[in-house]
Image 1: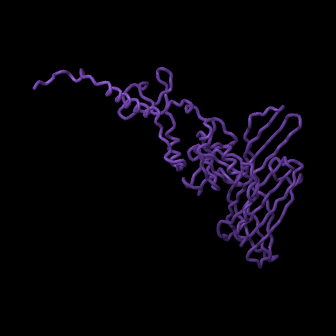
Image 2: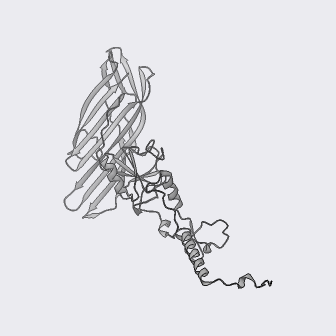
Image 3: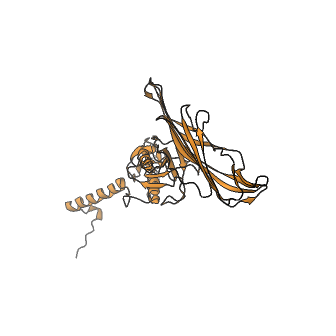
Length: 378
């Protein structure tokens, strides 16, 4: 038997084998260049969406040719940076963050349940949409009666009546429904006003609530709900007892001004503030009555009012601006009740007009009421 000594490199493959191998290589190359992992379902979990968002970030540098190239290396790749294959399509738009806020006036941190609303900054309702925008989120939250909407990680929408308890954040995620629009970030909400009139909750079982409702035709509305909730037992502190109180303020409003000759001013705002305080309850010996009042002077919350302002001058819309103002605690008068009562209930209403201004940017023509209800167990 004769054994051939021809080198392997001299062997020739038949034409059908060459075509077959060419197809295999073409499919393999396409999977490297264009293969991008898709969600396993129409609605991914929050963790999956976060991981996808982080994975989509291109880590780029400039090669000797001046073109952006992918800095991520395949395992064992020791070649020159310009010779490395891109693992994703070279979507250079991702090199620049989205810039269009589309009505969002701020970005604030979030926390809480990754799959629900418990502990979230906007804890009223949560949804997700593969074509999310800030406008779509606002519309959804407005239909449910919430004052604020927040888009997060590109495709999530959260609704609530207060925001900002964890402080400001940085929002850079692209909206899944508009790549040039900002829709929050990882554990960060792009906050918008929905324009909905806030839902008035029932008063607390131990504490008080004041509803401020001020209007001027169709051009002005200020709706605000301030609540004082007793959070623990009273502690002896002469005279009487001191009760810990959690104060919150939520609401929204708008002002429309038009001089009739091309200049308009539209302001929309939301109200969100909270802090702890104390109430003192004492039984006055000289009268035999309960005297219940706040243990400190009425306070203010910096930037408790925030929103947007849109001016139109000579019928030309100007660049929108962000507004911020203090929110003032309503100075409710002391409660006086017979000392024989073990539960004190009180309802009062106060007028709002040009001599008693309470609302933000309240015009002289606006009128309204502050309706308060208290249930207190000393």
